[in-house]
Length: 464
Image (cartoon, rainbow, N blue to C red):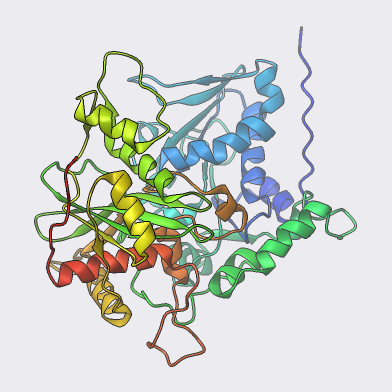
């Protein structure tokens, strides 16, 4: 007996075009909220239903990012009915086979990240979907294209979506040359935001209002879908394609650790954990970037992140930092990494005192020389050593511990790496005089540490 599963999706505009397009390489580019990912996933799901035995791959730069974004959309909106009816089942993977969604007709939808490509790149596919393709390098992209040779579908294709980036990004260049077919989506394509009559829905009124409130390069990219660079960008050499924003790796225990802090409540509170290698390069590997929480709450979050439970009873739920520190002293909890040699903080005396009390560690007041700090960071971003060279400051992907939903909903940066492209000189002043005081909290914390290291570290930590 055949079970009928009803699923409704009415693509329009560019979403309809991507469903019909058979070009070998297709990039769906556009501002935030146009339904790009939904359209790509609907195409993947439909092709798996229509082509028995085909193999598709859904991939992002890191698997953890894919799990929290694309796979949620797939399970809750795209394949929800098919999963409920038992036509699609998730397989968690094994030593020999990557995680995938298995269709009853023999089709497979494999999921993975380019941060650990061994399993997913060892197979052949008919269709590959890359989410947030600007995160990949061109080498990542070309590795994917070499796996399009399964031959179960009449055409082989890689499709991708992204928000626009700088006009010199390799994806834009590839599209300009005609190697990749770029389809530009618009908010009017999304029926959640616009009705069939072209008028905004109530949800659309609210969402577009948030995007209209964005300024500078974020407005041009996320509201209007433009491939532009920030006018007056301070860190012009910043390159997120595996130069300054890099994949995670196991940080050696012997590397020195530092913490830097910028206080905030309505604005984000930022605490960054840095590691310094033997050549003096800095790596941001963990970050708290949250609003609407007290300093003591942040202190508890970071202490839980850098320690682990070793007691014989189940791990308790901590309400206070004191309870956690007591367990550390009693040997029921232990640090998983070296303690920071230095904690450099914004100047707020009350917040510093609160942080010191809850961490039971001393802090150092940041040097507020903005110009010197920016120049020091710019120097560290330059590539040095034998070609191609390496910068002396890098950020590991997915370093932020929690993505702040309020910031995400407001389309504001949720971590330092997201701040940097829009960190610009104040246009009301002479260029190079002062940065614009907006979305700069992670950049401030980063600058505090770099300035402190340039003049020499003073150890100010009381170990618990």
